[in-house]
Image (tube, rainbow, N blue to C red; front, side, top):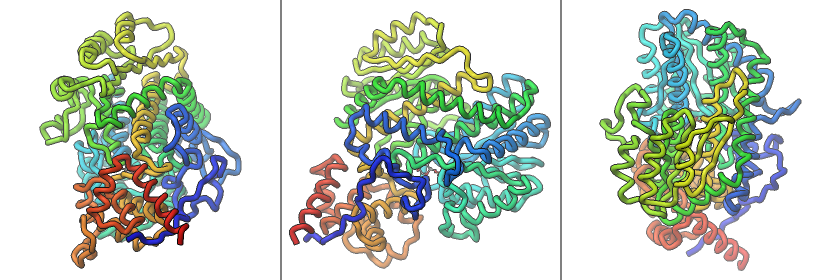
Length: 612
Ligand code: F1P
């Protein structure tokens, strides 16, 4: 029996609607808003998807006088970056008993690792001691696979910070939470506030302070917002720092791996590069230097997106593979490879993907990446990440239906790339390459790789890059943008996005749980309580909620949700049709493209309500 529902939540926004206006989705923080630009991204062809992603990314660098929000290039952001860079420089000058710690959850933690590794590597090259350490919620396993639940644990956040900084007298702690929301990071910041003699806290995120999450954290007296409020007070005396420009809503609502991840990388690289230059080449840290460096990242966007057609072709190839149940493999080398692992790991929570759908492999795997806990295979990781794992587990079954993407630059061993390309080509013609080089470089092995591949995207970067900006950083950001576009686009083409919402997200932590409940409200028009009820029924696979279920806490709900597929689509179909869980499941099986299943239900509902 179908129930009558209102579909008022499904309003169409025009692309010109201004997300900065006060009445635009007023109850949501910027990081959770839906972007007017991408409202119809789910029905767009690949080339338009790329264009929309480009426009969303460009919002990061918009400069507006009198704007409602602080932006990446705002005066206050540049000033805070200068101050934090000076603190980093002090530690470089006198590293004894000092430490810089970068920490975050999910993508934010992965980028903490990425930036820490890059900076320490550079210091070691100069025979300087490494001064940076990273923390990721869930430990190293979370570096390359989706582990969302540790994000909800503020105690483990504080303890891990205490442990990593044991015996240090001066610690610069940089907590990253794009949504100003992760309890793990809130716990760490609170710990810093309790020990001001040792710790200086810095918070990087992309919402204004008043939009920080205010939900009570079980077992704690603080919320993310109360911690931010205290930090704002201390910031006046430069005892704490907040770096929180708004970037505009993500292209896929809430997908902070995209702009959030890119901006994290940009901001922290600007800080570390400025401190590095000040310490090793006596280049003073200046306001203009910081701004100029930030702007040069804007040029990376332009160069990357100038290849719209090539990116769209890759997106289509990857989308075709996913549509027919096959996979996409990124094969890469060195630190560009790390970005491919990061991109692949995000698809699970964002699109409900299987780890086999998009996989990343990097040269020697963990050996090459120097993570703290060593070989993750030995820790029972979901799958191997080295090329040897690819050759052993994936290559034998590879067909033309799978997409293989080689990612390399002229500073990699191009003969090695060619060797692997030959082996892949024996199995599939669906192989593509993305190659970074500076103008004037010629590598003969590259021509051979080119011939083996069905498409090649060749990024040629000007030799004369701004002094502050290493080529490596440009290639990295460009690679991140490209991979985000390919994996997001491929999942859109597979029907895993409805309008610009992640309709099949995993409900594996409190933020994702609330996001799912909100999405159900928006799409069904039902009140919050009914939507949460439907969500729980889908999680526990029951038609009636027992007392036991209702009294369980959120941790139990999100833990149980890990084992269930298509939780949100299931809840939505039940809400819209009144089907039992089993009926909804069989409905979704008949229509495996989630977007189409949801649309069919919404259509039926509209017809039904209209005929009454
Ligand atoms: C951290 C994070 C995201 C991930 C997912 C769950 O968010 O793990 O990286 O994509 O959405 O949350 P944040 O603390 O940086 O906002």
